[in-house]
Length: 209
Image (tube, rainbow, N blue to C red; front, side):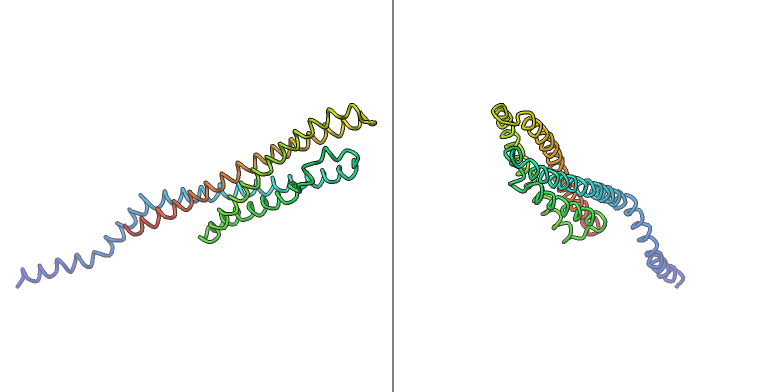
């Protein structure tokens, strides 16, 4: 009888102590697997917010330069050949894509829901495509400006023509650099979103071994 009671008490203790044992095991798994994944995901979230903020500032700068370029085009209307990029309206519609994409990136970094991450990823791809188109348009405009500068020799206002051409080249060169930066940022944002999604999927696999 005593042995039976001891035998019955043994499983009872095991079952009673089963809950704490499982809790300890889950804490160990938490510390070894989930914590590094969470830290990695937080790292990518912070990086995504930083890239989004830079993207917004970059887009705003391009927009301001585009408006300034349009104002110069109205002032020096006799030298419109130096402002070909303004007729494509890239300095106006391009930055809108960049600012919206940057805003979504900041929002996705703060609260990376699945829908928001997918929308931000799609917008980042679109921004990269827009930046690539802008790079091509600016390169063509700079090539046209180079040819137009040579024709300043036959212009009645030769000095003014050369000044406007050089100033326009400087502005478009700056726009070109900012556009290249935007292209790199858009690609980096897409990579960050992909890493966040990968770490989230890894976390789900860890929850269901």
